[in-house]
Image 1 (tube, helix red, strand yellow):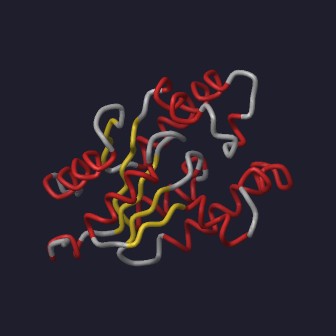
Image 2 (cartoon, rainbow, N blue to C red):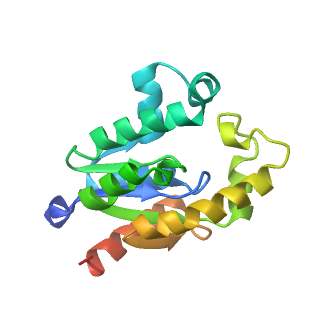
Amino acid sequence: MPSKEFNSLPNIYLVGPMGAGKTTVGRHLAELLGREFLDSDHEIERKTGATIPWIFEKEGETGFRTRETVVIDELTTRPHLVLATGGGAVTQAPNRDFLKQRGIVVYLYTPVEIQLQRTYRDKNRPLLQVENPEQKLRDLLAIRDPLYRDVAHYVIETNQGAARDLAHKILTMITSQPID
């Protein structure tokens, strides 16, 4: 049973690369807080009735990012939410603004080796359908890591511990080290 002290916490938004565990950790965090959990990628699919690979194929990454910004804008106005964002959500300045201004942002930092282990069989990740997925992950992290760090109020490493333990760690961090 979540305690009343958590009711006053703002929304919590999880950012990080694909394979960081945002959805899994987010579900546990929402359960601890007694809040709704949503994943922005799942919401895009639900609203469009199409898969992300299909959107990428038909509209390109630009079309997908436009849809993503609309969904993140909408979701970040809802109360008592834990939201997992797509790995590239931070590439759009409006998304970074919505996230940082409307809640607490936690960056789940994950080394490329772990990302690769967690994603290598997943065909639902259009950006990894390339000849060298490891290099692609390295290239993406090089571009996105500064953006994740810029938007985040907290950074937590996800390469050790189960998702439930990470959710507890995040909650402890947020409640013991308030942001300014």
